Each structure stands twice: as structure tokens, then as C-alpha cells.
Length: 296
Image (cartoon, rainbow, N blue to C red; front, side):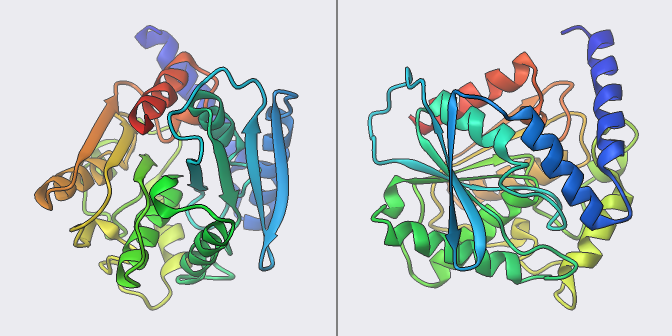
């Protein structure tokens, strides 16, 4: 893809994202789910719904399993994004389908309570319940890859912190797509990249922070995992684009992980935007293929 084509595509992404942005959060959630249902209608995948307590969850299985894994017991535990205000299993299917196809693994995704109706720590509590549900199904933590995009990347990190706090076994590794790691918005990219980011704005970020935090300090590692102590963490793989305001959230996280002697890998994709892996483009397929290689 040349630079002119990339600019046209980013313009299209901006327009589509603008259609989904709405002051009425409930309408935004509905539009996201409707769009996802339309785009992810494929006979090559099986979606198996279930309930974890009262929340919806689902397994995604790719039915054409040409990809072989060394450990067939491994699964991917996926946390969807959406700024903690929107998002769902349905909206995350563009990611869970690609992950299932490229990795050959089953992917588990769960809904969690959303802000502003349910601010922090509701989403974290729901993630912890979903984790315990998976363990109750007979899976070992050492066989579970935890993934997430944007706010879901934040949730994946915070869940791992919580598991360590409870002296529970940690997941095999973490896969993070454009993770939101810093609710203090301290990175230079929040301003340097705002004019070219086709998905996120600082206005949107501040709205999400206000809805989610409540009285919780933005610097708390349980909402801004960038400020956490990562000692003992499993390996972490991070993907981010050059054209997004959360670029420095990923760069800074990578540096912090290395400072704590954690194995970490960061891939920065030139010309790409926030969670570009959801888009139907070749670079997205390449990115998810890199994830599968990391898992293996």
C-alpha cells in the first residue's frame, strides 16, 4: 500500500468511526454490534455462547484448522476494547476470528460491565470472574494466552496484576494491540499524533477517563498499568501503529517491562492506526500472523 492509498484508507476509517461516535453511548454500542454482526457472518467460524454469572461470553472456533499448534490445550482469553464505555464480544469478533484462524486456537471472549453505568472496578471484577470460570473448565494458567486491544489491553495488564496480587498462577503470555496504559495521558503522542489519528481524539479519551475512573486516581496502576511493578510478569508482545495517539503508551510500557527484566517484544507498524488489526487489509493479516508466531 502506497502513501496515497494509506491516506485514503485512513480517511475512510475516520468517516466510519465518526458514524459510530455518538453522544448517546447506548446507540453507539448498538451500532457497533450491528456492524459487527454484518461483517463477521462467516460459515468458517463457530461461535458458542455462554454465560459467566450474568454476563455474556462466547468461544470462537475456526473450523478449517490447517494451523497446527504444539500444545492443543492452549487457548486465547481475549479482552475487548472500547474505552471501557463500549465494545462487546460481538464487536471483538474481527479480532477473535483472525486470532483463531492464524493461531489454530480456541478464543474465549467475554462482555464486561461498562462505564458510566459501571465504573472501575466493575470491568476488572468481571475479568477476574471470567478468568476463574476458565480455570473451572479445566484449563491451566500456563496454557492461557491473555490478549486485548485498547482498553482491553489495559484490562489484560490489570487482570495479570490482580492475579499476582492474589498469588495465583499467571498466564502463559500477553498479546496487546494498541494498549491503553496511561490514563494520565502523559505521552507526547497524545498531542503529536492527534491530527493524523483517524480513530481516537483527546476529547474521546478524556470522556472515557471521566466515565471510568470515578474517584480513582488516574495514576493508580490498576487503571494506568504503565505505573505498575511488572516483576514476575509473563512475556508480553505489543503491536501499535505510528499514526495513533496511544503510540507512547506502548513505547513506555515496553521500556517499563524491560526495566523489570520481562521478556517483551514491540512491533510498530508504519502508517497504521489504532487497532488496525481489525481492518480488512493485508497489514492486519501480517500483524496477526506475527502474533501466531509469537505464541508458538
